[in-house]
Image 1: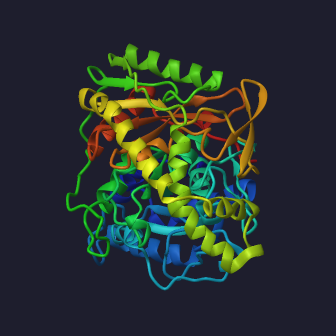
Image 2 (image 1 turned 180 degrees about the vertical axis):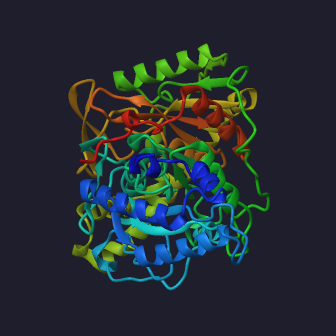
Length: 479
């Protein structure tokens, strides 16, 4: 096995090698750290490396597998990249903002602590845009993160560093957060998997736990690895009043077939123009599913064409108002896009919030019956290919069907609608590549709190296509 084959193993495969004592957690961590540094040098995806800490933890994991000390946890010894936004004791959390560049946390958020308690080992923190505000990953604090598959293009955002590091082989597991698509956008852009669990499934940190658009969740290269993480993190914690009592245990072992599954679909969520390459890729995905025995139904949703803009009404009023406070306190230390967003939020009203919630109600009325009648609802993750790496709000330049264009805020991504419908679990899966080498992805949506439907579909689809990253020609070249 080459070093490249080693670092691209799934977490599930690595755990088997640890348990059989064919692979040392310490040696594996050393290989991952070397690859993570290589990835960061190539695409700028990390904010802080935790080498000494990680190697000490890996030695403890190795001792456990050798029968010394505690029983190994379900994620024992697996490297974990932590999105910089998440508090991890002893590490920096600047929110990609110069005003907070020296902040070091003295506590670890519950979501991360559950992963660590299961044996996962944080080895680095990953880049985000300032205050996780963009669908790209660029800031004054961290610079611009670039896509391992095409350095001119974005990693997506806001969990862009996590997506890039996974694609580049610099971690086995990663964390993300998602308030308008911030797990699913980089998953699509980087060709990895990501899961937006239903609101309340994973405990959150205050006060984001009370924002029903906001989710913390797993990112990985395989669906089973997402499920292994999710099985550790779900369930109520008394620190979060919004966390739900039910803990779902997702199947990671029993084989699942696509044959006989029912899938409703939409090419564009009825939002308007979509890039021809996205259309072609999505049609290929549908044709593949049909060939595997999936029953397909095109959904007629009747959603407003501006459904993404309706989500922005909510985000501007709730999230944007908190950024307005940051602008008033820190002014010129902020990125231009944060200042622009904060100033726009100053104009928002309570009527905007009401309008966004009313729209979500109407949208679920039409989607709900399709979710009830089918295993999942499927749509692309992006309506565009791109955009370029350095771009930011207010409008983002990109190319649609070979012509220069602009998109406002999140309108090039088909993700924020499912933050509006936040109790629906959503799984992002790779589905191919555009002509410029950029990955493309699809989203599988299930009815509220039916996480297992997303995972069952994802596992079956992944098995049918033969997986991702399991051969050298399926990986980006960093050299």
